[in-house]
Image (cartoon, rainbow, N blue to C red; front, side):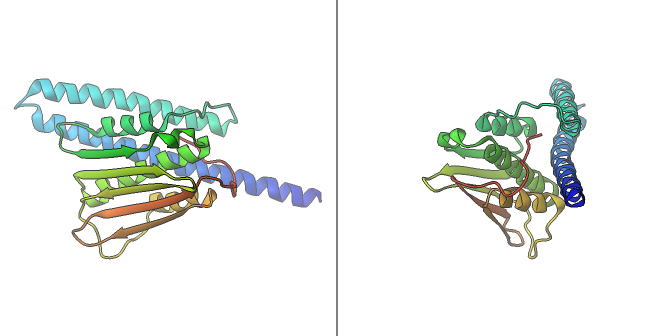
Amino acid sequence: MIEAHAKLKEITIVKERTRIAQEMHDSIGHSLIALRMHLEFAENMIEANPQKAGEAIVKAHDFSQKSIKELRKAVAVLKDQSVNSQIDLEELLNDMIESLQTSGKLKFTLNFDKEVESGNQDMKNCIYNSVREAVTNGLKHGKAQQFLINITKSSEKIRVIVEDDGEGCSQIKKSHGLQGIEERIGLLNGKVSFSSEKGRGFKLLAEIPVMYKTNAIKTGVM
């Protein structure tokens, strides 16, 4: 009995560390993409419009500070310190979109059903992380310029759609980020699918039941 308990504890610790590693991967990956975009914009504008270049550098600096806070939050979780998980999902999504805006190069359309805010925090964390990773994936791999994000709620499920106009691909190779999306949504008894065609962008479709039973440890927000 003691040996079984010790084994269960070890498995739980490994799962928690794996989860946190995934969150750090997704969060830092998004942060680096955003920082690169702002710095590239500043580099391109330094001679033509020094003022705009300076504004982009200030924005990159502010975002780097925010990224450091997120990293500290992850460390706090590793130390079993309490972290406030109450989030406003729509606000977080708008902050994410704002962090990627430079010269209006990217276009985001967010259709958000405010009824989703009444959902469980774990579910909202999952949605935020999944959308963020889908956008990061579109920027990094697909060089996308436009994103459509639809989040709707019915009596039975919440549906999340993220579409981009990126390069697309004929065969999807699931990165750590896409695998992380599958794992998060799976923990909430949800389903997710990815679709893409060469030159036709990339699409994520996820459905999470409104009434669910968590299959494992909680998902976190970075």
